[in-house]
Structure formats: structure tokens, C-alpha cells
Length: 636
Image 1 (spheres, one colour):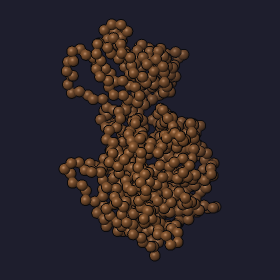
Image 2 (tube, rainbow, N blue to C red; image 1 turned 90 degrees about the vertical axis):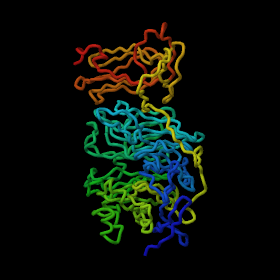
Image 3 (cartoon, rainbow, N blue to C red; image 1 turned 30 degrees about the horizontal axis):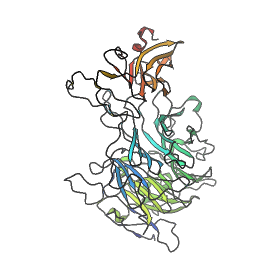
Image 4 (cartoon, rainbow, N blue to C red; image 1 turned 180 degrees about the vertical axis):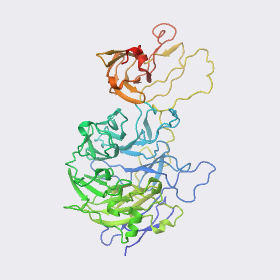
């Protein structure tokens, strides 16, 4: 008969419940147990009564703990990002200090966000884009998980985004990771963010790369399998991708075994992990039946787990483990030295109800988290027929496994006692992390947190995140290139002929400067724009830059990008760009994307150097292709 242990509440938990203990406790020591440990909601607005019991935080996209270089994660310094729960819990970021969770930002939340630690007081979030952007032909702008926030030393130091429906719009991102900084540095200079497949006709997956000073697009080429997860392990970042035959790939990649993992080392691009190195598929296995690899890392070990793809039936739970560069298959289809995941419940009816008609071995994997200081890991499972709509009402199933594939214990949550609480904290397990031995956190689809810990060790010595003390809540996000511009409903008042200065685009995005006196205006970034065709189908675009700027030329045929130059920094002066075009996919519009990197100089608006300037300003120059060439008849 399974022993039960009382799981007492922390300072922030209102309710106390019983839960089955985890396996592995030493003889005579109290076992670690899973129990609901929900933080108190933030204070309500004035005049609104506080909730009488804990509230869901809304969908929790990620939970991560700071991991110093070469060490296990620091169990009393954690972060989570949430989508929020109506007016009671705004979308934002929460921190854990060993004694409990508290809100640190009610901005930069996300529908399904991610967190990447870059230093002990430095981290990035994959966040939702800004509201207020314009629709395009009746289509609402995509905002889910397609922007970044950079937090450091108590503030959001930068926000990164682009307006929707542009050639340089960011795509949705599902993975984020940074290599830890080398002392004495306190912040990483190597972070990666990855997500959806690139839009046609491009082939690849969307990536952003932070090199310590700039954030650049660095797509993974040739294979359009979207990125799903990223994990840092020692001096490399690993990412998993979701393979499908329907994903676009170049001819050279067609027919090859799918590389389900990529990796990048310091200052290198993402590259595929050889399928010969990764012992996953057998000849009889169908890659289309398996989901992407869920990743978990700690110390020098990387775990990867996959199961049946949503809506499929023939996939099988497979768990891999990488130690000292060598991969082994811990659990997988029966045969050879592989161990099949056995039945987890005494009753076949109970197993079918919780994990689908195929039982445990044909379940869907939700997450995997290795325990530091051991060879074990926690695996979260769900039914492959379970939809997102039903996940919030499902039961979480956690399986404790060893490096040899043995099942050490099974936990279902909520416990019976927790089900009787008014919080109704049900939901399939979605996020798992273990910062220490017998110290793990699970977030379910309902937005509830469960904590594995021993009695007397549910709270730890406080480790306040530097610059983010309890009670300090960030409520404003810095401006970025997706900040909607204010549109006036009426003409501005007459200011006696004073000219309004355009924005100063110094840095990521600078505030507008005060009005300019004495008939001075900012010189336009772009002037003297000319274009012509050279050598048949090569477009030459020449122009003058007032200051150093980041520039890219994009050719579009209707809404599809058909050619583009690389994003590059050009100094002030006379400049030109060359773009090779395909006569069979002739563009209908050119977009010259510009971003000034220095303040624009002041020139006279009446006489002198600025008197006759009538050209484009900084930002996005988009014109029909015929207009830029000057003669529609020159088009093929």
C-alpha cells in the first residue's frame, strides 16, 4: 500500500493536502512529496476585495532556475512567465527567492513564453507583441510570443520587436537559451531564440542571435522544421525541432533522415546533430508518429523524450540520455537493450482514462526534468487524444525514472485531498524543472504550481534576485520598433510655424526629441535614391545615408518575399546595394528597411544644406517596383 505523507503549506499557500511520496528517500528519512504550492495573487485594484483562496496564474509558459557556470541550478533563484488570469493576475514575470513566488513585472508576459537566464541578475523573455498595431486587409496583427524583453539589474533594459505584416516581422518563438557568462562577466554574450518555419519562398526556421551588443536574425537554412525547445548544456545550446514531411526543405535535404536536434557552440551558427549520433528511429518506426524531443538538462547530462504525436496512435514513448557526449536510449520500443515503458497503473481502465487507450507506452510526452545529484529524471505524460481545450481539466501524470529505464514511482496530481479544495487545481502537467535533488516544480495546464520537496525543506534560505526585490513591480516596457505611433484625431494646434522634430532613432528605439527652434529640421536619413537594372536581372539601388544605419533591401511579389540582401550596417555617405532577382518571380514591390544608429543632424529648412531635401525619412521605404525603376516598361 502506498504511504501517504502530509504536505504542509508554505507561507504563501493557503491550503494543505496529502500526496503520494516520491521514490528514493533514504532509509529513516522523511520522503519528498508533491503538493500544491500556489503563490498569492498580486494585490487587487483599489476597491476590489482580494480573492478568498489562491487563483490560477493563467497559462505558465516556462519555469527556469539560475544555473551558475559548471554548477547545478540554484534552487532558491527562479523565474516563471505567465499569460495571466484576467484582471486578477496580469500577464508578466514572477520570481522565486526560496521562501515563495512574487510578481516582478506586469509587462512582457506571453501566451506561451520562454525564459533564458543570461546571468545571475540578467535574463530574457519571449513575450507577446504590443497591442494597438494596425490590421492588414481585415487580418489582426499576430502578437503571440513574437517579441523579446531583456531584464537586467532591476529593469527592462531593452525590448525587441517589429511591426506586423512587414518583411522583417519577427515570427513566433518557442525556444530560448543563453550560454552562461564566463567570469568576471555577469551577462551572457551568446543567446539564441528560435521558432516557426520561415515564410515562403524562404526555406528554414526563424532564429535570433544575441552577440552581446546586437540582436540579429540568423535563420537555420534549408530545412523548415520549426524549433520547439532549447536547452543549454555546458558550452553548447541544443534545440529540438518538429519534423514533418510536409515541412519545406531544399532538394539536397529531401530523403535524408530528419535531424531532430541542432546545436550551437560559442560564436558558431546552429548546425544539425547527426542522426547516426542520435539513437532514435528504428527502420520500422514512423517519424511522423512522434512529437518533437522535449529537453531537460542539468550539470553534464542532457535528457530528451518524445511520445505519440497529438492525434496519432502508433508512436511510442522514447527517452534518451546524453552523458559525456554519448547518447543512450533509456526507454523505447522493445528490442535489443531497450526497455519499454511498462503499465503504470494496476487498473487498465484507470490507465486508459488517464493516458489514452494505448496506455503509458503510447502516451504523449509533455516534459522531462532530470534531478541534479542523481541519475534519475521526472517525466510528464498525457493522453495523445487530449486536446488543448481539455488539458485544463485533465489529471497530471508524473513518472520518476532511472537512467536504466526503471520506473521508480508514479504520481498523479491533484491528490484526492487537493481535489476537494475550492481552488480546483486540475490540469495536465506542462512544465517541469528540478533545481535540486528531490526539489522540483511542475506547472499544469490550469496555471497551478506543484512543488516536490521534503517536509522542513519546502522553503530555503532567501536569495533575492538582485535589483528585483519583493514589492517592486515593473509596469512599463521600453519602446521598440513595434511601438504603435500615436494618431491624432484632429490637426495639432498652430505653433507659430515651429517644426516638429522626427524621432531620434539612436539605440534600439529612442523617445522623440523636443520641438526644434530656429527653423532647423532633422536631415532625412535617406536621400538621392536611384535604382536601375544591371547585368540583366540584378537590381542596383544607390542612395545617400545621412548617418550610419542598419539597412536591408527586400523584394516582394505581392505578400511573398522573393529576394533580399543581408542585414548590414553601412556608414554615412553614398552607398549602393545589389540584389539578384528571379525573372520568373519578378517583384511587385521593393522595401528598403533602414534604422539609423546615430542621431540625425540638424539642417536649415529655409536655405542652405537642407533647403531642397525632399526625400525619404528613416524607417521603411516601400514602393511599387516600377516606381523605383522609373519605367514600368522596363519590367519583364
